[in-house]
Length: 146
Image (tube, rainbow, N blue to C red):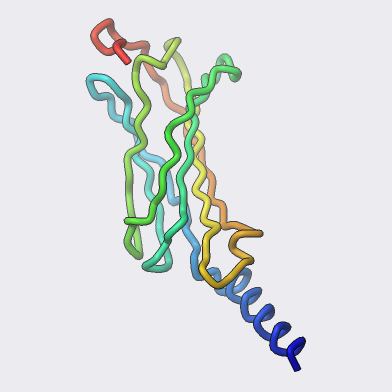
């Protein structure tokens, strides 16, 4: 009796995670960068399929295309204030961290692995990745005060 109930609950949780994907977040794209006085802003566009996306996080790195060992990692943050549908946010990288002029590649990853009642989201989180190449210039002296 108890094993049948647990099996049914497990089947419902598996269908919710792998077929319905209620907590799905999809990274739609990365836009053109904007240069401000002290930082570069990179817009991302993502869509959510539920109203509560508590626990979703965006991580991003900027890598030098000519020297792949040069990596600038941005601050990981949550996306819990996003609404259902299409959303956008800006990812910020300080100009003073750009060491050389040239091509840089922005890698963005959105991970959602949180569900109050379904453990399959924690074991098999939903991951959406994208990358885009930019040509960035080295900052002027006034932007180099981090």
